[in-house]
Every structure is written in C-alpha cells, then in structure tokens.
Image 1 (cartoon, rainbow, N blue to C red):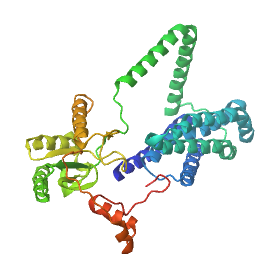
Image 2 (tube, rainbow, N blue to C red; image 1 turned 30 degrees about the vertical axis):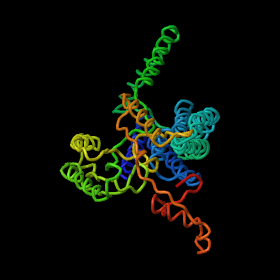
Image 3 (spheres, rainbow, N blue to C red; image 1 turned 135 degrees about the horizontal axis):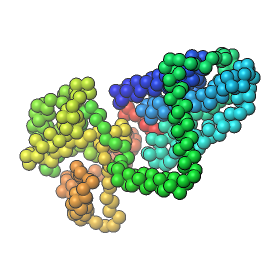
Image 4 (cartoon, one colour; image 1 turned 45 degrees about the vertical axis):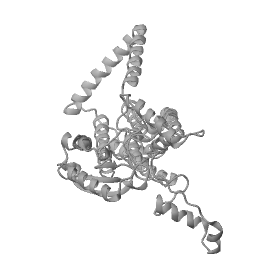
Length: 430
C-alpha cells in the first residue's frame, strides 16, 4: 500500500509538471503560465482543506482524484487568461480593460463548466454499498477541486491577470513560431473536417453509431471485477487436515509447506500458525495459516517472480500432498474487505435440514460451481462431521459468584472463536 501511494504521489508531481509545460507551450508566456500555475496550487491546497472537512484521508482513491483534478482545475483559469490575452493583442486594450471584457464573456461558461463537472462526479458518490464507498472519496475529491478552481477563476485569476499580463509582440521565429504555424494548419484542417461533417451528416451519424456499437461490445467482452487483484507483496496459504487431526499433525504440515516456499526465489520469509483458520477466523486443530512475505518489488521485476507466479508454483508442488487440502491466495486488494481476494458465498438452511443434509447440498453446489470456467480456487469450510461442543451456562451460579454474563460469554467467544481488541467500529468505519 505504501509503495502504491508513493507511485501515485510521483505521478501527481509528474502530472503537475506536464500540465505546466503544456500551458507554457500554448500560452507562450511566463507570466500567463505562472498565473495558471497559481490557480492549480490554490485549488489543490483548497482541496486538501475540503478533504479534512469531509473526513477523508490521503489514500489511493483521493490521490487518484487529485491526479485527475490537476488537469481539470487549470481549465477555467486558462479560459480567462487566453481570453484576456486575446483582448490585449487583438483589441488593443490595456490589461485591466481586457480582463474586464474577458470576464463579461466567459463568466457564464466558467460557471456552467463547474456545474457540469459537478453533475458528472457528485452522483457517483451516492452509490450504495462498498462500491459507493470507493467512488465517494474519489468523486468528492474531484468535485471539491473543480468547485474551488471555478471560484479561483472568477476571483484570483482575473486580479492576477490584470496586474501581471503585458502586451506582447507576435513571435516571428524559433520553435514557438514553428509550433504556431503547425497549429494554425491543424486548426484549418479541423475546421474543414467539421464543415464536411455538417454537409455529410448522415455519414457522421453512421460513424457515431459505429463508435457506440464498439464501446458496448467492448463493455460486454472485457472482464469485470469488483476490485482487480494486485500483487500486494505477500500471499496467504491455508491448509486443512481431516477433522480429527491433532495440532501436532497441523504443525508438521506447516513445516512441510514451509520447505516448499523456502526454495522459491521470490519469497523473503514465512510465518505459519498451526491451529488457526483464516477462512472463518476460528481456532481449529486441523487447520493452519501461513503468511508468505515476498521480496521487495524492485527485486521482483520479472513475471516469474510475481505473486501470481508464486501461487502457481506452490499449487503445482503441493498437488501431490494427500494428507491435507492446501490453497494459496492473494490477499484482498482493499485491506479490510474480507481476508482474501475474490468473494464469499453463504448457504443458509431455512428449514429443518440436518447438518448432514446441508453438507450434501453444499457438496453439490460446489460441484456445480467448479464447472463454470470463470470460477477458480473454490473451497468451503463447512464440515458436518466436525466436532461440536455444547456449553450449558449456569446463570444463577454465575450471578451468585458476581460474574457478569456479558463477560462470561465474551471469554467463551475469545477462547473458542476470536475477539477484536485493538479496533472498534464507529459510524460504519473500523
């Protein structure tokens, strides 16, 4: 996660530098470029303040929003600067008059641009479920930055343009002259193309319909996923022995699997816990879990050293193990959303089915699911033959001894199940 954020921060500065270079190439004025750059800095700084008010943190979603916002927040300022420059060069006005006239012409379009962009991103923040939570921070980050950029374009940018813009002479030679000549040709060609499109409107509609068809077909063909699986820098291994297996046998199996990972060139170190099931976070003698830390990303530059390759090699070497069921998986792409990549499916008995009957239904369901080509790595932790322990709590005696029932049940849960002691839930956030 830290490496991902580091790369996004790097991209953030690269995008800022690229936007400044592009502005200078087209505006061809250090003063105008500086005014537009100041609009970016003010808008992004204001976005950080908005994120603080909304309770957002610096994460991949908000940073991605900032990367996209850098190209959006400067648009309104450029419109004001270019129109003021045009009034200075073509109309012969002084900077104050040119800016006043420019604002009379572009105030409406700037406001409309802000409202349109807000109408695009804000509704995405109200999508329900986990998907909505993912879009919420991304959408609001962009919406806040665009709103601030519109305010800056209507207040700060005109004031700076009136103070710093100066009349300039047309560039007659050098790289900028060549660029302007080429851009003029491109502008004329674009105008002719638009003219042909207006005359041949039927062909334009056909081309547009073809683009829509290709987009719909690609949307249907391309694979979909809630969150794409990524190399997180470590993998998880789960193994399960028969229900009556002892903890010593689970420890022996963990050592056997550890030797497989020890020979893998991409593995840095391993941690195993015998008697713990990652699937349902329960303590079971016949289960075990391994955390396999991979080497740093800069040391794993080839596909053979990726997490997917490590999983494939382990599954191939562990296929001959008959004493236990083994499964190696990628961790979830978003920490906190489950314990593994993929999805969970629950079967619930709504009648008077026995555990054996539910086991039979689960087995048939798994067999049918494994026939589907888009599903892989299916497993279930349900065992009708598993040992069960029934506790009868003497409530009267507990009260007589001064033991609160809540503490009693919490202790039982911690002993046979699990308990979270370092985190708490508040306002649907962990």
